[in-house]
Length: 66
Image 1 (cartoon, rainbow, N blue to C red):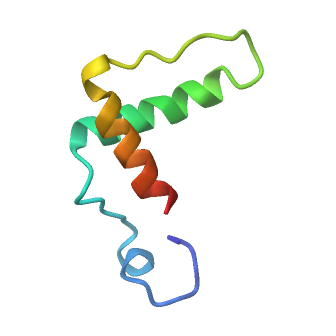
Image 2: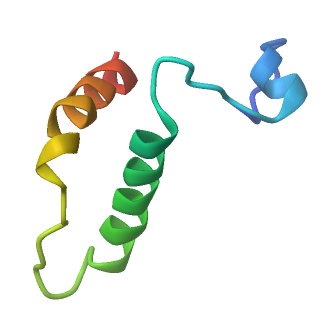
């Protein structure tokens, strides 16, 4: 999206915003991406998710998937 030749605002400005997702949840999602790359081919570990964030994370995952 950011490198597409189209005339999307995201491509012109080099940023994507997610107004429906809180900063805390976006930070947790970024932490998961980092964790996923770090442990992709190594030992299995569990990604820590605070119980109070579970519902918001599921809603964000659904939003980002669609």
